[in-house]
Length: 143
Image (cartoon, rainbow, N blue to C red):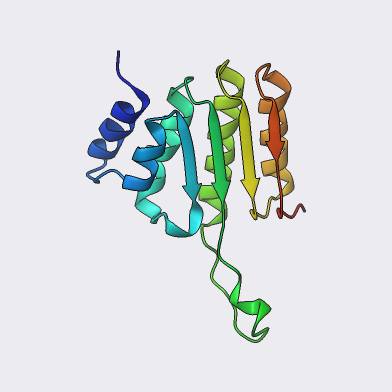
C-alpha cells in the first residue's frame, strides 16, 4: 500500500513537478502543512489531489505567514497570494478530506481570508466529520 508521501510524489510526477520538500517532509508524519505564499500555481494540483484522495492525514495546517504590504503602505496594492479559484478548489478538497477521513484530528486555517462560499464548503465537511478534535481559524477573516 502506498504511503501518503508516495501518493504525493506520484501526483507531482503526473504534472511534471518535483515534490515540494517542505510538504513532502510533513507528509511522512501524515501532516499536510501548506504555506500558501510559498506555493507556486502549478504546485496546487498535487496538493489538492492528496487532500481528496487520502484519508490517512491526521493534521492539516494551512497558513499565510506574509504580512500584507498594504499595512505599511496603503497606496501599494498587494497581489493575492493565491487566487480565488485555487482557494475555492482547496476548500472543496478540504471538505472532501473532512468527509472521508476518520483520522484527521487537527485543522488549522491561519491568516486566510475566506469568502462565504468557502466557509459553506468547509462547514459541509465539518458537519460530516466525526474525528476532528481541534479547529483553529486564527487571524482568518470572513465575508
